[in-house]
Length: 73
Image (spheres, rainbow, N blue to C red):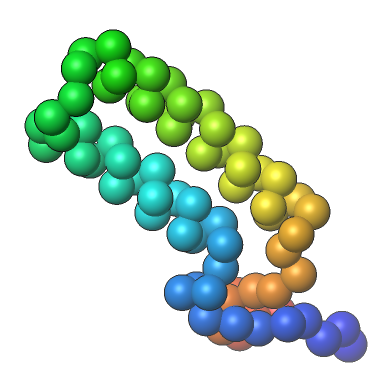
């Protein structure tokens, strides 16, 4: 039997990166007062860097699972 570190989803780094990228995109969609060029730059950055950060965090820096996942183990 193996033991895993269990913690709340609120404490997961990957969730916070996903929330931040979603909020930036939502802010732009709702009319954040910036130029069109800035919108393109921000969305390109968020759409590219956000998923890469999540993959890196999940692959190399995640040693915990949520209680829902732990219940399935």
